[in-house]
Amino acid sequence: MISNKTYLRSFIILALVLVLCFILNISLGSVYIPLKDIFNSIIGVATEQESWQYIIQNYRLPKAFTAILVGSGLGISGLLMQTLFRNPLAGPFVLGISSGASLGVALIILGSSLFGGAFALLMISKWSIVIAASLGSFLVLMSVMVVSLKIRDTMAILIIGLMFSSITAAIVSVLSYFGSAQQLQQYIFWGFGSLGNLSWNELGIFFIIYIIGMVLCISSIKSLNSLLLGENYAKSLGLNIKKSRLTIIIATSLLAGTITAFAGPIAFIGLAIPHMTRQIFNTSNHKILLPAVFLFGAMVMLICDSIAQVPNSDYTLPINAITSLIGAPVVIWLLVRKRKMIF
Image 1 (cartoon, rainbow, N blue to C red):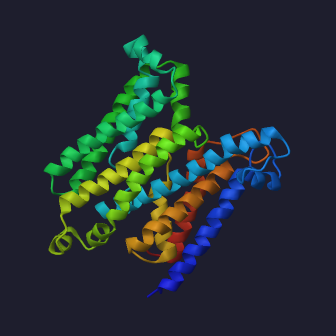
Image 2: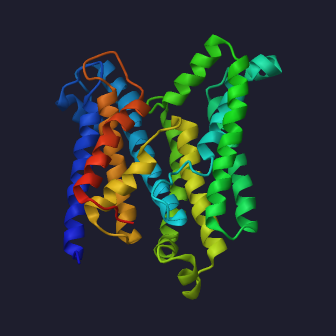
Image 3: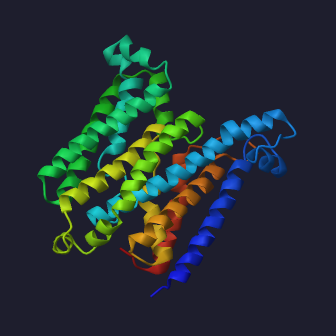
């Protein structure tokens, strides 16, 4: 049995590493900026060059905060889905949320080939992609919620979510077939995922929705711990299964849907971070796991983004590729080392 002091020590270490990863992230980029000027910019003191101030305040800081929100949000969403479905392969996009967002974006980017100029006009605004992705994930969420109210079996909801993903993927394939080379390229670039496209105003809207999702997650801790013991046992404890399931689905949808809308579909993080955290903390208690996944997810996302920037280079690699290439071997190593999966 691990003591609370040990957990507290682990949280402090993770928080310090997260701060170091944050500083490292805003220190790297195509333009070299001395560490002294980076700290001066953060605390509001003028830097040696005015352009450095602009780069840090309007590009690097928003991108670093976006990485924290994306990493922690996807990690916690994955934790919720794995607990709800009692399936180690469940991730935040298992309900078809990412597929719904992809369909919305495909309709905007690729739809002009089939539906004419009205869709092309929507491409003028940067917000059109965010709104389309949000509406797509919202429609899939509504469909899943209606199903969840009528079906008692949780695994049936998982299968229906996968079917929604297949349907939306099929529609996207049809749109891709009729799309032009330029449209296909734009859609593929969106699918790579990006953390560096948000302004402070967009980040503020993202943060508000993120907080709502996190509040729902925190309010579900007791339900999550009960569901680990099985739905029948949870019912005997007086847990309202339908209400708890609905709250968990809404929380996951708010987090994963908003992240996909603002940053694109980010792979690996939601599936792997909960497993990595369980291996390190060796517990199933969500009072411990939730803050641990928050810290660990944010930390890993910052590290992946730092690698994706290719320091001292003009190149920025797709964040989706980095999260999978870096993270998957780590998870394999942890599972082989531990020889069992904690769940």
